[in-house]
Image 1 (tube, rainbow, N blue to C red):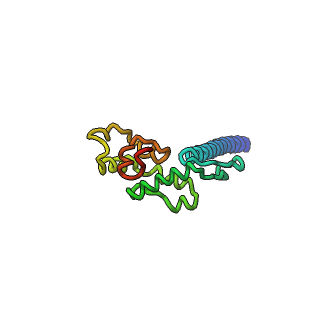
Image 2 (tube, helix red, strand yellow; image 1 turned 90 degrees about the horizontal axis):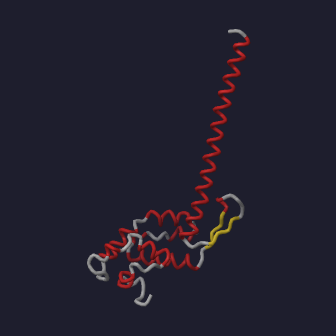
Image 3 (cartoon, one colour; image 1 turned 60 degrees about the horizontal axis):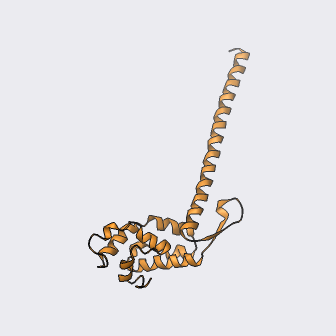
Length: 165
């Protein structure tokens, strides 16, 4: 192989290697940007779902500080009360004590509240036949999160709420 052919081959290999490295670095940046976007979304979801106040100390989502509000504590009380009657509602005592709100949110999102809701309806005589089927399957979640009363008669019969809510 002549010297000029070797040089051309080396230049071609360097260009290819540079292009591969550039593509790799671009993909790494894109993935990092997506992870940061997901982290901000997780913060927004947690703050919204658990009525938290949040303090952003800088632009790093890992440095966000959460502060429970009165609404947070009321929501947690409802969740705990449901768990006392239906342990599968899985109130996460330890995660709440640690104020690990991401863990609390993860646990909450994994619970099959619609199944618990169905058991609650079956365990009471509060609804007429067929009426329970017309209730939104997210009614128990809505009750825990925001004290919605779509399950009102069931909640009263189970002692979770008083007649005059």
